[in-house]
Image (cartoon, rainbow, N blue to C red):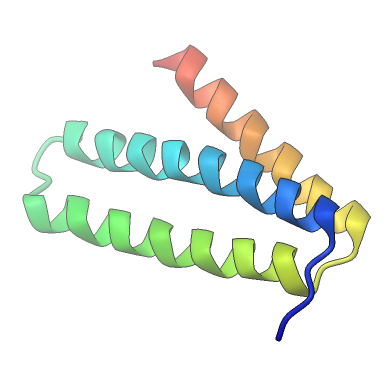
Length: 86
């Protein structure tokens, strides 16, 4: 059975929430491009989802605290900038 520290659960949850928003924003940006198809949007969503799952898994199980929180801050900052820019 995996034992996960409390700070890792908090960091993972924050990363997952921000990552889902970032995935949706990425899909919307792809949809807005001229000449993009539904398949392009689906591919962008699938790639974003896989990257999010891998990053969340690494934060929950492997990464040291400074790197894990750094990833959370970078993803959160990216979501904030993309939301303010749109």
